[in-house]
Length: 341
Picture (cartoon, helix red, strand yellow):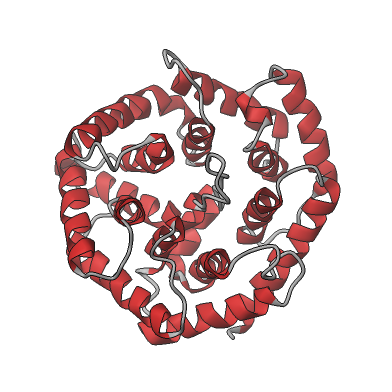
């Protein structure tokens, strides 16, 4: 295994242990999600700072707030990494309140979408971004009603931030989904569509991007991994710009997964292989992502992960996956005004 990838694995394990020890009443997979946030930044988890951040969060939110439930560890991690946790929380709540304005029900994905906007430093543009996101959601519901749900909120916010032409976004989603399903890999409908949402964030030929993912997916299948029936498949969207031959990249991911399996909190009794492969892929995207990924991750900061409904774990380590593509799309948008609306 690549030395840097091994270091990331060790840091993830160390951070997960520290967070789980200090926040033992939280769901274990959310502790891993929070650990990944610190790990992608190359930082050890500061649990003392997270605890002080929790006091701030409690002081500024109501008892039954959605923000003090499943996504709390994600928010605390982001606050702890901020230079000023209090200012981060103030800005976060302003964006979150803008997103939930006029909504009948709040959900965890709205909180995570707020992080997406804030970590891009676009809190002052949130009203414009939210309006674009609502337009994209309306079009997605019209074109793909069965495949569009509340858990797409964070992906859609990424698409809105890039300011790509909405027609282009919808075309990419339709073409990409049709291509992936035509490959007959066994990837289920919802994961296939989520993968397309990740890939649609960046400019470039959608079919070409899908083809790169399919080659990596098939290489992983040859190594005995299969997560086509789960949402972890969208994590592969973070690896299309690595420039590493698919079989080599698959080998690195599998070696990382096998190593994680031997570590406390990542063995078969705590986490299934499909989820471990997902985390291995996300760590690989940090290590092998190249200068563009490094720049994106330094701007955005890592991870979004969430427990989905009453099911085991709905991954979406979005900030790691999509950050480089968002950065690339924003840069291209600045250079090519004709692609904006």
